[in-house]
Image (tube, rainbow, N blue to C red; front, side, top):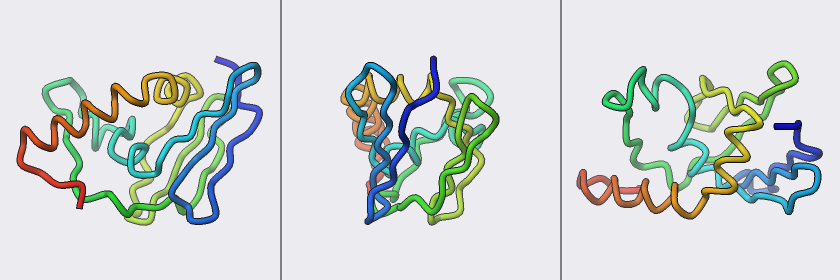
Length: 116
C-alpha cells in the first residue's frame, strides 16, 4: 500500500482522516483506532489473546508520528502508544470500517462491557 497523501487529525482530536492517492478519504474515529490498535497489548500474540478494550468513547489522539516510510505511531490521551499503524492496516480499517466497528460493538455486548 502506498503512503497516504494526507493524514489529518480533527480539531477536537477525535478523528483521523486518512487520504490515499486515488481514494476518497477515510474518517477513522479515535475510539475505533484505540480499541482496534494493532499493538500486542490489544491484539495479543494469537487470536485467543486478543483483548476487547472497553471505556474508550472519549479517547482522543495526542500525536501521530511517522515510523519509517510504512506506518505511524498514534499516541492517545490514555497514553497508549504501542500500536504501529501500517498504511495497509489503516486502509483496511477504512475499507472495513462498518464491519469492524460492528464486530467491536457485538464483542462489548457479549462480554457485558461498555464504551464508557
